[in-house]
Image (cartoon, rainbow, N blue to C red; front, side, top):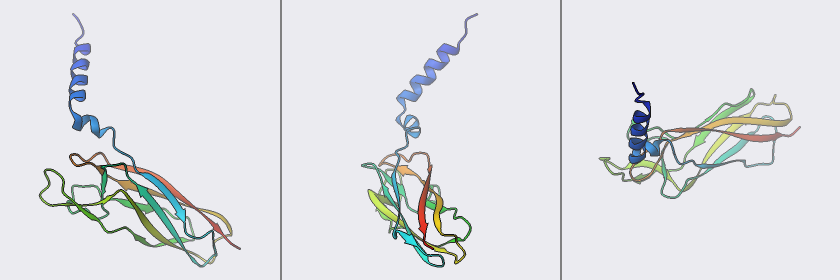
Length: 163
């Protein structure tokens, strides 16, 4: 009795290759991320401005931080600040309307290049020196026909705390 495994594997492989939606799910377009700090040094007890510049591939958009359709994954910049650092605000750019095939109303998306701004407050007790503020950027990339699997990418900012 011969094994049917090679036949089944060949059939599954040909179905996956023939289906752009299934194949595309594993090749989600990735955003280029650049984290930066507005000031070279920050004193304890003061605020610091952090930015994340996001550059998307051509013909790709990502869902906004407040998608109109709850089935879509919202864009989120989530910081996990170290002790003595508090996130005071996170500002996303205004969303753009995008009509996607099969959607009854436009999607609220971010396109091309945009920046997310974060304000953090350092406690007066923060020790001078290098201070790393880690975070994660979560998003769902889409083109004009399909939305890909959500992506979560680690990001970090390095602050210099002055004496």
